[in-house]
Image (cartoon, rainbow over all chains, first blue to last red; front, side, top):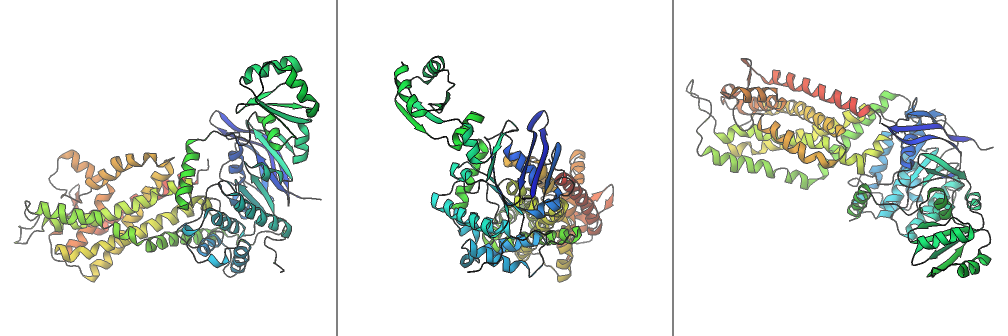
Length: 326
Length: 290
């Protein structure tokens, strides 16, 4: 059956006394769309850094396409393509020059990569713009060009770190169309990190990392099944008091997040009337939904998937992106 | 429409496995990128003339009015005006700043841009450092050569032979300094330290280089600082070649170290040795994976 293309075995990454990644193991099969989710600071970026040979592991093994990241980083690098969270295009070169640069630093033989470059540029609808400077491109066009560039050396695994962050919904849809097309035509493996639930839903399997450990790894459906039954969210003037009452009266453990109470119950429809009657704190809003990946995320990490504090670096990134887009 | 396969059937990658050829290719490519950027950025080239013009024509002309000719006298030889004296220093300044900044620029590139693409390519780290140093050296050298167009305006006549000799001198100096820039860059986590480097490294390197005053008859401490400054030797070599062209008394204004009169060749030995140490340290730091 499916062959293993990425194998992570007891990976540890320490910075001084701090353990960023704490002995994680997982494997990804060839052709899989693998989602790697986790809150900021959970060890997600560190893990990707090790997988892409940018960081040296403190312990454990990572093998990609048969190459060990420590023993044979060049072999790993030839096997993978990466779409970084921040644009890593050269804005002062044209689209084609960016691809030519990539071909040269990957040492692709002259004459062999040009037809591939044309195919890829046509796929991402940038062939007509090939001789335009990248700085004249929109954010979506840049992303598409990066995807084309990441595929130029025909990698077995494509890492996509937040590939559609900051793009409008229509552009995101386009990018996913290209990626889906790619998946139907090739056996490429996609390793994805995202903050968008709809993108996580597309994955064959998802790993969730928190505090440096993998806390769940399964198909989206099975992950959602972990959250037994339904999810009820309600808003009250005093969520903490409401939470105490719910715990006392119904034996449930609600999570207070972003001013909203969340609880998981087996039979949501029949539970709501009981809840409304049994609560002395007035209810402002109440809603019921089938478990989403967001609920899985909240349950496992205590944080909403989009609920990330903005760090100084993120602000700087946002600024750079604005500047690059002019 | 039958689109041919975009990725590949399973097979070992087609890349040439020879590390040396990959490294060489990488060096040339990174060098070429820097040169291409430089050639395309007309505003940067024009802008880079602003500071030298201020120094040469305002600062230089202003001081010339009250400072008599420097050097000369001994054998009835005429001295050089202050403007003529600092002209080689200003050329060196252009080389110094362009070269060091091109090295430091990778801090920015590393966090937000292009360097990431290079770092995950199957290239040895040392090739990236060497390619960047050579690219920075080339653009800084060109910048220095462009400064020579001011020669007629300050009354310095140059021969083709001197210009030909200046090219390797500027290149070696620029290579040493862009390697220094790289070494600084690999030790910097962010651009926050930039002001610090500007004030506590670049300015002292410039002021202590003999670009603006002769390095003779100085107090002991200043003599010591100017002699350990590698830029002094670059300035000295450029001054010998630029002022030596028109039988100007470059000899009397030249650098002496422990009583030895430096020649351009000796100067270059010092600068090259410094450059080799810098690039070696930069490569070592650059190759150390986190």
